[in-house]
Length: 186
Image 1 (tube, helix red, strand yellow):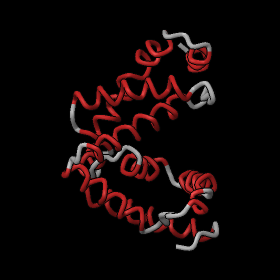
Image 2 (cartoon, helix red, strand yellow; image 1 turned 60 degrees about the horizontal axis):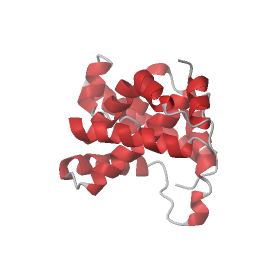
Image 3 (cartoon, one colour; image 1 turned 30 degrees about the horizontal axis):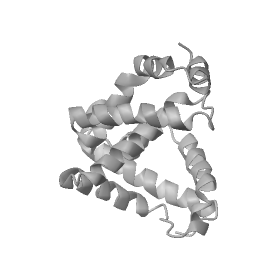
């Protein structure tokens, strides 16, 4: 079923919308969650929580043209919160490691005023990602959005771990430079 039709079902509060969403995106959402929480049942819970969150947030939003991205963002945040709440020390250490890598090139705003720049920052990051070739962009997104390990990325793209690390290092440096040209002080 088309995404816009599924969103319309949410808007008219048709409960079949959740069923259609699960049929179309259930495996992808579960896989995304599983990559973060590393537990079958927890990933399933996060997936189901994402459907409920979509049910409660779609009436003000109408994500017809970006429905999967909308759902993926929800399931990702729920999964990350689940890791934090359940104190998964090993996984939490991995998430902290990724945060430390990104803090080198993206400032972490601590006050409300800085948080208002989030939309501008998102656009700057998106424009940076568009400048990368497909392989670099995919490696960057697999690492910092899907939280894939270096080993799984190297296996996925059939390259050495050293190449993945070097690519990520260079991309972070390029991102830092791009953000500085956009007016961000790092």
